[in-house]
Image 1 (cartoon, rainbow, N blue to C red):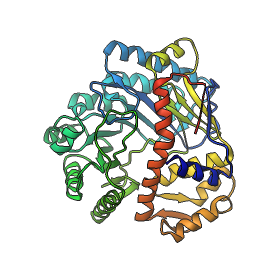
Image 2: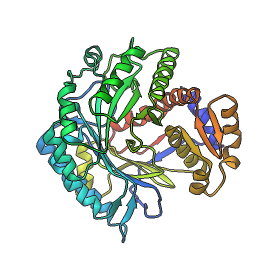
Image 3: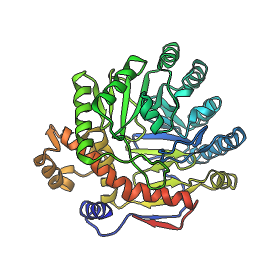
Length: 416
């Protein structure tokens, strides 16, 4: 898999140089970035799911409170670098299970609003057991407008496979009706062993019948450092399943908002990834700016130590070449299923056709994209191969990076 990603990287960046990450602690110069988003990571969970690759640790109230105080210090340290409030598009809380700190979310938002003007809403991830009237009301009173519930599956056979408890869909629907949000997204995993079209269809129907106006259907990925024993689905079966469920959703006149997400209402959206630039706060949080990518340490203890010492908790930094930044931009913009030539030129000051006209021309010939008025829209075939290549990218880059950062809080460097 690394051969495919290496050859792709060399061709698209027009260079044999790898992505080289180094341990640096430079300030985050974000003030000239447009379409900037915010992300906050809270890594605590009551139980650790064996399939989850994200940075998380078992919840302890005292440890969580100490972490939140360090998180607030990081926000102030970064925010003070600007003399004026910076307008940002959105704020997302991820984890872990950030709703375990529901009573501190308001404090975090208040700290962020001292330096940033959040224009397009605030979202947070929830475990199904967090979907209670009291927790939802606390979050709404804090300013949260969007929630994403990690269902994974409503069906007992897959809940058991993933080590999850049964979900009371009726009680959840009642809580969601009592405390409404602009977006209620429910997450599902597809490509589980023996999973069928009817299995996924039933999950999606159950979601929309019980308070969701948005669903996310993420592929199961077997990371090397997780403890899951669940085998991966074969490529041809996965493509058939993704195509069938996409056709079903579009047939129900659901709006496709990204490769794996569909909405029943136009305003409903939930994505912490499809932004040109973003600032990440907290353990393992990433920051993407015009010229660099940064990732914080995965160690909660080392994160707090760095903050308490008045230092930024960055573990690794990649300084982009222009072509590297273009590839990163295109890869995550394509996640939305559309790439705009005008937006590319606005961001980089050069035309997409000049930089990657050949590649997009080939993609059109292969049936991956259709083009109209400078907008490249992904086809069903293109969506599957994006997903398929994203698997290669995950194993060649993300799996390797996250695996290293789980072992070393501040490695000297990494080459990908």
